[in-house]
Length: 39
Image (cartoon, rainbow, N blue to C red; front, side, top):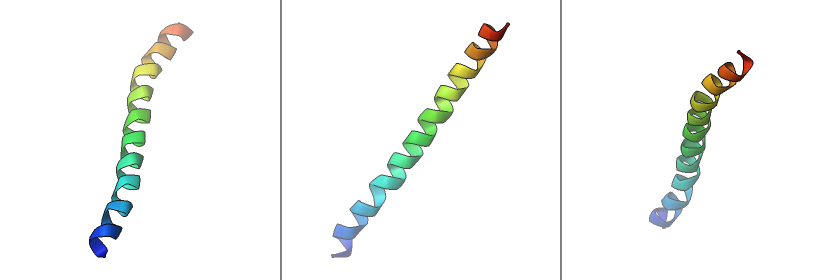
């Protein structure tokens, strides 16, 4: 029974870390672009 509960508790944290990674990646990409536009 615990084996069935465990997979349900895993994906949200994985999804959250993936979303956090994507937001950081987009910030790293967009920030220099925004600086270039402001100059």
